[in-house]
Structures are given as C-alpha cells and as structure tokens.
Length: 347
Image (tube, rainbow, N blue to C red; front, side, top):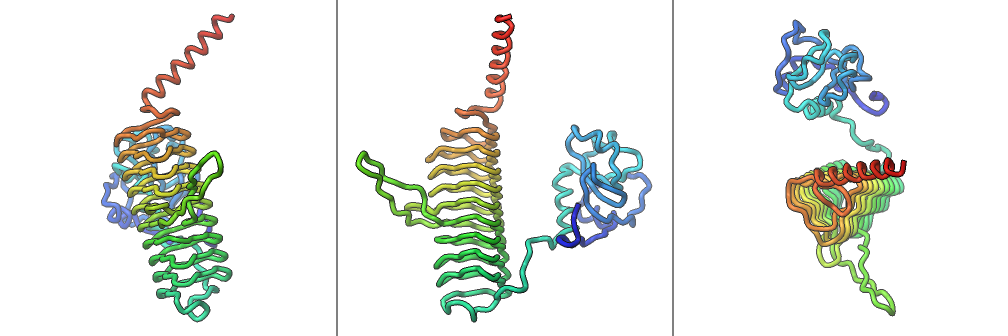
C-alpha cells in the first residue's frame, strides 16, 4: 500500500477515464462509467474503490475473495471473477495494470532535494550544469563534468573528472562514477560503482602485470541500475549498456561487455569480460556467463544457470553446463527417478 508521505496519488479516475486511457473493453455489468476508482492494489490487499489485475490462474482463490471494485483480466478468465467485480478485459492485464499504476503515480519518483546546491558558483568553473540540476550536500563533482537539465546527484556521490550525465537522471547516494558517458532518463541506485578499471592482468609464473584499462562505460537512455552494482570500464574498447535495459541489485558487469536493448538482468548476475547480450535477453538471478561469448536475442537464462558457450537467439536455457530447459528438466527428472530406484533397491 502506498504511503502519502512518500507517494502522490493523482487519482481518483473514472472508469471511463481508465478505459479510454487503456483502449480496452469494459464488461457490461451495469456499472456507471462515472464510477470513481481511487487507487491501485493487489488482489489480496485491495479494498472498495481499488483497481487490481488478474493474470495467473494460481491466484484464482485470491480473485474470488478480492475486495477490489475493478479488475483487469483476460476475457477468458472472467468466469473466475465474483459477480460484484467490475471487469476490464485485456490481452495483457499485467502490462495494462502497470500503465494504470503509472497514471495514478506519475510523480513518484525519486526524492529530489531542495536543500542541495543547484548553482555553478560552488564548483570549478570547468563544470557545466544544466537547468534545475540538484547536487545534494556531500556530493563531489570533478573537473570538466557535464550534467544535463533536471538531473539529481544525491548526497555523498562522486562524479569523476570528465564524466558526462544527461538530462532527467537520478543518481542515488554513495554512487561512484568515473570514465563514463551517461545518457538521458536513467536511474542509478545507491552504492553502485561505474567506470572503475576492469579485472585485467597478464599472468606469468613470475608475477602478474596489470593491463591498462583505457576504455569507457557508455550507458544509453531509459536505463535503471540497481543498488550495489559494479560496472567496469573497458580495456581497449567500451563497456556498453544500451537503451531500455533494467539491471537489478548486486550485479557485476565486467570490462568490454555489451548489453543490448531492453535486457533484464536479475540480482546477483555476473558477466565476465567481453560478454555480449543481444536485445531482450533475460538473465535470471545468480546466473552467470564466461567471457568472450554472445547470448542471442530474446534468450532467457534460468536462475543459477552458467552460460559457458555462445547461444543462439530465442531459446530458454538452464543448468550448468548450460542446455535447453526442456533437456535440463528431463535430466533432472531422470536423476530423481534413478535416486528413488536406488533407495528402493537398498530396501
């Protein structure tokens, strides 16, 4: 449930407003288009005046007893809904609920301090700040930094020499950014480090020589990076994260990696150097990849899987060593049966 101390609700909205916004079909159950919807909620936490959604059949029982007034769901699932629930039919209920959530809470956002410095007077003359930039107390801004309009740099963050950050970005507290070019409308959460040198050494029996890391980190637009992530700059080429990608907490992206557009990288993923993810790749939690491989467009990597080879596009993978998920499931099932048979033989 949202707390008005932290989130501003832009509602209420009428059913007609919502339906026009989504371009969906409203069930004909006698409800007035002027009915006011006050807030969003989950099936189990909803109360009268709330809008919710239903997409997964394992939550049928929650749908049956929900106290919500309006539910977005697929038309073929309407038989599971209680009679007193107003229904909005959708091909993708979760996506439409997401859009409605954004309509109710367009301003949530990340806290923007009004007590920070937003004037160039306090900084080196080489620093260029756009309009309405907020630099909170304790932040350090290096020489020749460029920061675009309406960007916030939170307290105790360090923006290194020559870094460029675009407009409408939010940089959380205790973030360190060096050797990086960052585009517009990006969110980088607390404690993340970007642009430090990668783990590159020339090894020998005598000693290990450090390889200079002279690349950059390029972060394009509309990207979200969770807290306590580590993104190394490239060695002889750039580490690149392309438009629309979303990265969870505690992720490590090594030098020279290229992350395609609209990828999803869950928590505790590790990508070794020079790994390429093509567009729309999904990496499950605690999965990882060895270096110098490509994971094809639209691939999905299950949690804890280990990618040790280049993968073709559009398939789902699991296990270590990696294999297609159907093969992995059969192997796991066979092992379980074999284990049971062995126990029965001992009896």
